[in-house]
Image 1 (cartoon, one colour):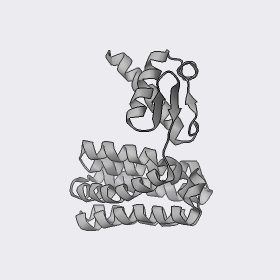
Image 2 (tube, one colour):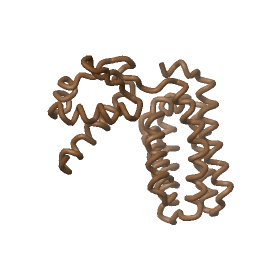
Image 3 (tube, helix red, strand yellow):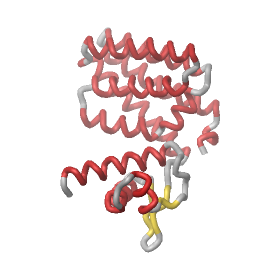
Image 4 (tube, one colour):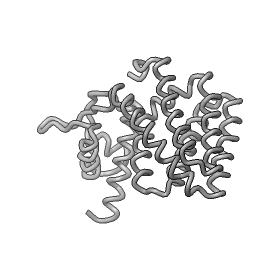
Length: 218
């Protein structure tokens, strides 16, 4: 596969995966190569490659002589991902506390300021986007490409749950406060405190989802 073809297949893969994770493609829905190819303006080949990759991730099932079908993530899958993230986010914050730069700290503080602004305006979509950015900065600050890759995937996998959790007005000020506490620990280069706070941040999101009801994701 040439570099251009690989890039095209990767783009198609991420578009389909996004569609699955956001619910655009429903569970058990057939993913038709021609239909998706027409939507994305590509041939069936990169779509076929993307579907095979999605099968390896467990998001799609390819049935011989029938087609590809959405498996998606169950509520248990999402709950499990949050359990795993509570450990990995702690590790990430611990490493970031050692390596974070002044510029990255400033980016995180600006992120919190903007989140507070959009929270005051009730701009839900911007709040979710800023949450994405906060974690991207934190993952980069860890200095580990592998950890960043794993956590970025997990962060994307639970985007529906994150969006639902952040739609709760009572959760938003708490999650902002949790982000601020993490940043303070990073500024102090306190590895254990950063680890604990980042882990608690994930567990609090899980508790909020328990309160909302995981069935609302279905």
